[in-house]
Image (tube, rainbow, N blue to C red; front, side, top):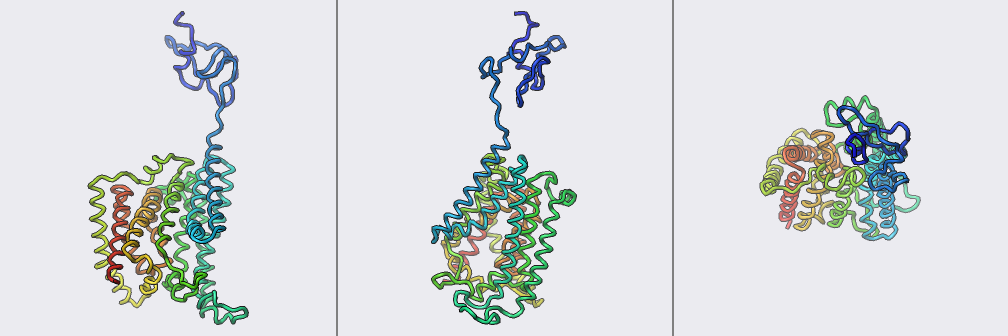
Length: 447
């Protein structure tokens, strides 16, 4: 055959942008350009004369569905499954209901993450994402407001008789506190809403590694601000007294059997089971990234022997510093200033069922891996060390006073630096060993 006569094989060697002048290819399909022979392009025969590889002569090649629709279907499936499982658990009751009660704290955020990744490519998903963001924002604000209200309820609500005097049901000062809570939470809502404005995100991108034009970042920032600032509102309104410990002291929350509501070992397991998939979905799995890419994004890698050894030693040293230096110094300073310190006795009641050797293992594994994946793995690479650590600290504001939160912030900074200089797996080992040592020491001290 004459070397100047093009063939289909020759045509496949060019770039993917040429359309023969006498034909129109199907939508979504581009023919290759002709090869260059002696500096000039040789015209291809008509489209009908060219059969792409894997196609039947005379038939159009198959046209793949848009990728965004596939992602939309995956994300919609995740949302439906989460809602179905939560509803089923509550319907069954017992431990399944307790498991789903823990899941309610994580599943809505996983759904928001899936919708955000879908919304980056699909307009319909973006609309649902905005709607779900609004619903979730309202729920976060409502929960924080309810925590303030719960702190002012006196006695066991199950023992309240119809027609009881409201003055016996609530502690003094409830109305002013609720007013301040509503005002502060409204301010938090306004600040978080500003994150939806591009100029605000551009300004933040100068101090944290976010992309102001990334749709996922656009959705994540308002929710993170809402969680971080909103979690501190009950603590501020209550004068530094953690709302959950106020509830424990009042005894207003009782189970159906009359036993006080406390943290149980299975609660730690349930929380861990929900935290891991929620972190994976928030990092893009399976809508935007495959599992291996997600684990790399989260910094969860196989540690070297040196990293594992460092993690164990650093965890023990950090626990010793916290127990003998950091916490005593903060407590001394707080007391010398006459400020409110964390109610250790109430916190002990809340955690009494897990301050055991078994509880030390469970807390070490679940908090070490779960919290590090969610905070140091997911958030720190996107919003930076300080902002992610503030979110981490705010997650403890329900059960810790300001003095203990300062200790949490200091420990979080150390973990963040370790993550930045190594990986999330190493910081998880440090965190897990740190929690294990402290809880085990407390358990042995009370025996």
